[in-house]
Image (tube, rainbow, N blue to C red; front, side, top):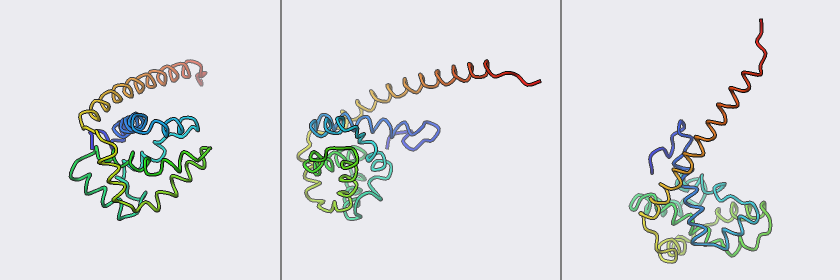
Length: 174
């Protein structure tokens, strides 16, 4: 996993970066589904952050996540992107039929419990979603890392300004 993936002092910035990269890849690979999520206010990170942090453990059946783990240990973190998008592709038809946030959420949550067709999922991940070069993921990570760091600095600046103004307004006790 990239540096700062599980770092609390860095606010899991590595994991946040990968969520932004995944959203970008989802928009490229499955534009209809990405637009459907946007239309209904569904942030894929609601599901996929846990998928990435736990490498799919506690989300999908053991048989399926062990299969993913084999590929992950052999090829590295790009496999997480491949399988995350493959899961969305596998469920795309059903998800596109859902017309609100809660039914999309419930459909995805419930569908993952029965995701045992590792052969189809792997076919999607490694054949239907190509190309998927690591250099593209690395480039996207660098881009989103810079954006998130800039946002973090801006938020820190706003917090400091707010604290300073709050202290200036607070009457001193004598």
